[in-house]
Length: 457
Image 1 (cartoon, rainbow, N blue to C red):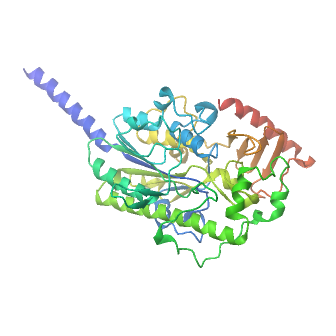
Image 2: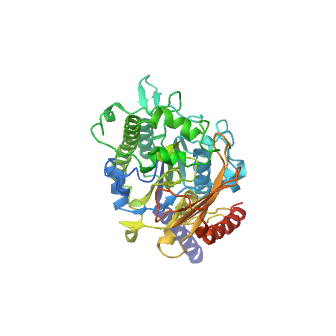
């Protein structure tokens, strides 16, 4: 009898310990903006844009000043964020392809759910259309469409802006899942500040933000000057290039650049408002101290640099993005850090899984960013960039290597090379590839390109 009681007591203790451990597991919120360039954030030194709530997250966490994406187009980058893999491995390279069941099972939401998390998705999924994985999630608030509209009609028949709709869904999710025994992981994907495609494309802004920045003069980018477009190779420098085609109605004059950039900033300020409301709700629900918040852009965006609008190519405006890891669940040793490490979108999945205490699958190619900050892992020195969607003349295919101080890009259909010293020439104004004095550095990067191209598969 005594022995039986001891066994029961031990079993109860084990169960209680397991429940206590589960209760301590952090909630995780991943916030993603669409076409958000690295410097469109107050915390990154932009003195015009108003992003007080995101800036506050940065002050309370880790601000990654050197974050990039491995492919600068939404569907590929989103697949890389979910899977922790390069495009060469996950294979999603057009707007119709979705995750196969085996690939989906290895994404961070699926792995978290398998480990007992409640998982939610809100906003623009951006991968495939017909077979989006709504049944995987415990909460799904996303229309099965490639590109959502900004102005939506809600159940009451009233028009609501997509950003505000996302905010309402976040509030509903938190009210429903906060305080449950199981921890949650919520993935949120804003449409903002992506343009609304059309002829001409537009930036629909909430009414309350339409006058914001109206009296602010936004400086023209250095490389908006015509000579920088004129210096690009003939295969690239055509009106068929999507980046140039979209530049015409939005950025081709100083007046258009002012209007478009203001609207772009207004949409980001709208996102910032939602983030502020979310943080306030976490505090009200008393779960803020057990919640990790990650904020990132899916790719960058050119606002007239090099005579272009958009992303796709290897320029800094295209591939560099904001990244913040914050929240009360983050250890105090990380708070207020500004990190120079070369962080990537493929690092989000392993960072989330590691923080949740879940083993990272061997197929994942990124790594835990926080482990690097703790010096448990070495920081990467460079990464492979690839963009092979569509091809010339609309989007010339480009691959390359990006390091902390150099960038090598190869337009693979044309054999055209670019080499930029991004420390001495941060605006990428001088292509060093043809200079004899740069032969040694060029050869080194060519060799590194071949090595990385094989590794990413």
